[in-house]
Image 1 (cartoon, rainbow, N blue to C red):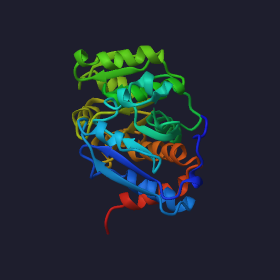
Image 2: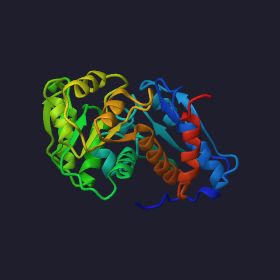
Image 3: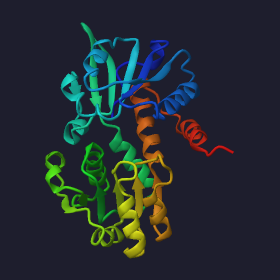
Amino acid sequence: MSEPATAAGTVPGRRAAVLGHPIAHSLSPVLHTAAYAALGLDGWRYTAIDTTAEDLPAVLRGLDLGWSGLSLTMPLKQAVIPLLDEVDDVARDTGAVNTVTVRPAACGVVLAGTNTDVHGLVAALAEGLGARPVREAVVVGAGATAASTLAALRDLGCRTPHVLVRSLGRTAGLQQAAERLGVEPRFAPLDPESSPEVLGAADVVVSTAPAHAADELADALGRTGPGVGGVLLDVVYDPRPTALSQTWARAGGVVVGGERMLLHQAAEQVRLMTGRRAPLAAMDAALQGELAPAV
């Protein structure tokens, strides 16, 4: 990837923020603020702004060169696309933008969208996989993160993952994203009777289901499922660990917490917004400190 057009040090005190609704729970301010401190970016600040899809156009119109960029969470990852000046290939193909960068233009600014979730997924899965190849993979869910997961699995060498969903009638958007990505997922209902067998045979399982939505699957895996040897990434990190992660570990699998994806996608955002290599160790330390249980 190319570096941003402007150097971070030329504009002191720039702003950035994470937008979404609700947003108070976001750990993005912890990660980005730690990065700014480690990089010596005095005066830079990163906040959380509760923003609905209806609010988003007004927020974007207010951006100027005092801003370095935005992080976006739900429900804004798709709603933002028609409001941007540029959207890169990864964001276009997945149909999801989680990062907006602000660049100077002849008249005002250029707002460019990208998707760093794919980078975050690949890097997080690599922590669990090591050098092992990905031949069989399973995605649980069919939303925006599932589309990013298809892109990540493609980059890891798997173009025909299983996709388990509660309703096959709600997969049209994901099927369109798969076509753009050049992958051929195998869709099947999320079923407590048959799904554990599919999960047990996988090298990689990525659950993109919301908090507690995979609890029934975890229960079924614990009762009837086989032993597992693959890597599970559950993108949910609150609650932590999830029921699915706990069951997976007890069955013999490797668990990568959802906070690892969060860390790596944020590191790529820092690189894009500041023009500097993200201080991953400092960001990781801040994240672990935030997630550590109170004593």
